[in-house]
Length: 265
Image (cartoon, rainbow, N blue to C red; front, side):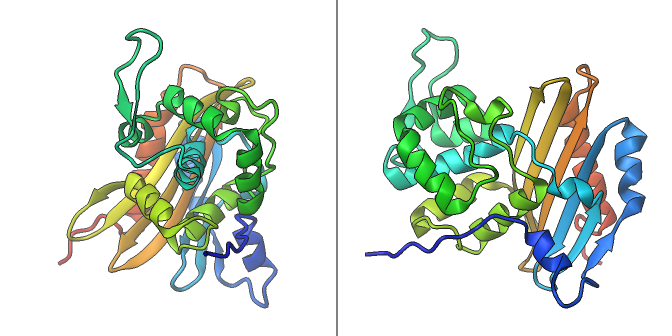
């Protein structure tokens, strides 16, 4: 029988700031050009966990909580696999709306951020079990009331960029209170690209909360077998902004500037 150990996603950066030395936290005001230069607000965190060095733009913003949007599909997938609601990543949930969308496997739904699929999953998990896993992981403010379809999109449940990074690191290193099979399958879902030089894994989420168009991209990039964890959060009152396209462009620009996509000489 496996004994679960509670793992907190909470405040990985705060721990660094209040350690004996915070020389490992580098403020990157030069990254402002990617935000104000594009008329958006937000923050970016990059953590070299091997050397425990943080590169941060807008450090105060890393502690502010926001609705997770489709990045909560990570928790839905983990809890669904752990409870047996999801059998495996090939499990199909048929469209009950009469052909509105194609029947999707869990892997397809995860990569498409298909919230209709994960709405079914969350309802099958149920509030009592979801409460247990949210508390075990210490996911953001853990507020899942009302427990209805897509509660992760309504701005009641919130999580900070710092907590998102903690979740990614604990997932990567197997420190979350889930069976190794569940972790392995979800890590496989997050993998977006792998080649001889690097691999990159992430989940994104884009939604409208109140008067803001908001977006997340959270994950890690591996180079020479060393993981670097990142979280991008952004928002704008401009509802016409294609925040998804802009977010991925900013992510690529920052990581390129840090030398991640260079071909070996």
